[in-house]
Image (tube, rainbow, N blue to C red; front, top):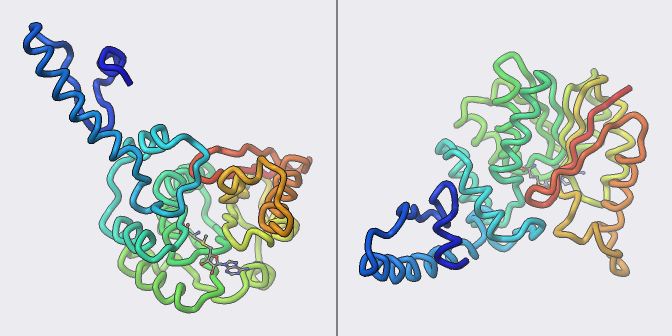
Length: 269
Ligand SMILES: C[S@@+](CC[C@H](N)C(=O)[O-])C[C@H]1O[C@@H](n2cnc3c(N)ncnc32)[C@H](O)[C@@H]1O
């Protein structure tokens, strides 16, 4: 970005560096230009780095600068979520991250979701966003096949003060859904990608009309938009799933190209 175009940014903020409104003299202008170059270099280095919770797993749907900008706008999270983001980055746990977590929270609040079923909860990061939205009278069903994940999630949820509104189900998420009675206001799907078409078949009938079926990773780092390589069963399953959710007359679907693609489906009937 050239100096004039950088300076013309309305909010005066680029890469975390606040810009002065305008140089006051030629000399001040030259000094500023030099400082700006140094700042810009530092900013570009920072901008090119994936957010810390994404290192090594950045989806690459939105260009890196725009992605960084979107994340820079987010309000700070509390210590529990921040700690989980650090843990996920250090241990390669593919959490939804704060931008999509916030979408889950916002959508759950908008429809006043009280009964929420989550499929693939890992260390409980997305569970926390959903449980906060559900409120003290809400229930979120946590599911994960890995008992070690569940143990860690339990500790995180306890720390967040949310354990009383979360039911922990360890085992296959599709079986857990089948053995849990009642309908749900919101189902969030983040299990193995090969299972997505089957999740569609099982989850949609379990939602109330007006409820939301939300699914992560539907763009799959852009692979969903390209012919799947031979043997790439995950990409094929996601492509099939995307066809199902857009083709279903029972659903009104939009894919948000945020992070790795978040599909939001409203159940119409
Ligand atoms: C992408 S991670 C979930 C991240 C979590 N939703 C978050 O954003 O914080 C997927 C998790 O789903 C679990 N999983 C995958 N397939 C599953 C299945 N069929 N049943 C239960 N858990 C499953 C994995 O053990 C893993 O922890």
